[in-house]
Image (tube, rainbow, N blue to C red; front, side, top):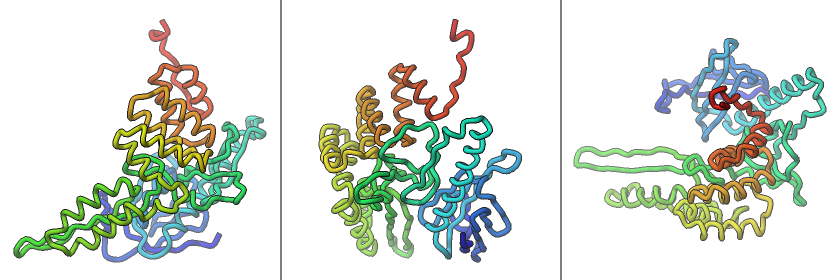
Amino acid sequence: MESLRFKFKWLDNQGNEAGFLSKKGSFDGQTLVLDDVALPAACLTTAENRGKRFVIAAVDGEGQAHQSLFSITSGSPEKLKAALGVCRSRVWAETHRDELVKEGKAHEFRSIVCPHCQATIDLTGMPQSPQVYCPFCHTIGTLESSQGPIKAEAQYRLCDHCGMYSKPRRFTIFYFYFLFVVYGYSQQETWRCPACMRGEAWKMLFGNLLFVIGVPVALTQLFRSYGGTDIGSLFSGLDAANLRARKGNLAGAIEAYRRILTEHPVAAGIKFNIGQAALSKNDLAGAAGILEHALHDCANYQPAAAALADCYERLGETNKLHELRKQWGIEEEPESAEAVA
């Protein structure tokens, strides 16, 4: 691949940029270079970003974990994130395949390319399903569609704030204040779904009314949180359904989710939200049932599998929990002699 070049600034633990001058960075498909630090892509355990801000975690030769935080000041953060995902995923998949070859199990290896970010997704041990989850771009993609890849699916993932499948985006929280001779402003960026932003947008509007200057920003964020993403989107009505679920209106939420499922019957993310709504009402059996349906749609959907494992454990479904963990390659700790006795 063509080497990606960019400029960046290190971030401190509070997320503030350190220093005045940007440093040089590059990625050639094998090694990520950050100033005088060289990180082989195969050693990167985490490479996440929110806009221009990145969190990189790597393991050195001695097994020690190291974390780096930086902000892109020149260049494309989207291209860097995608390139890192493609390289890391390919190396990990090839390593797993080589391990299976040595064990005489090469026939068990199965992988697929993410329809959104082109990362290699290792599906070894997973049953076939109509959708696939990419742990590198955190999206769900429909594999067999009469219209080909559904590009709009790439915009949906779990919201950092509420944890529900939605369409998160960047919002601005801005306040201006003037107290006699003291004046200033407070501004920060947040990544969340529109439903999560609504309360904050109203709070920002009323907080800026007295000094007016911040009102246009507040009104813009308020509009974006109510109609900027949901109207005409792939899963129209999802924001309203998620908001009902968060407020405890389970019946209203399920009715809205069902309308979405009428148009999109194969939708692991929507079914995951229904499971989360049932869990909020402590309906463990109902949640387990719908989460099983979510995994039927997308066998490797990690959030649904984790939630289902928790349901099984709380319900005492030890056999189902064992089978689920076995499918995901999770080793269970052997029971102690005292526990068995």
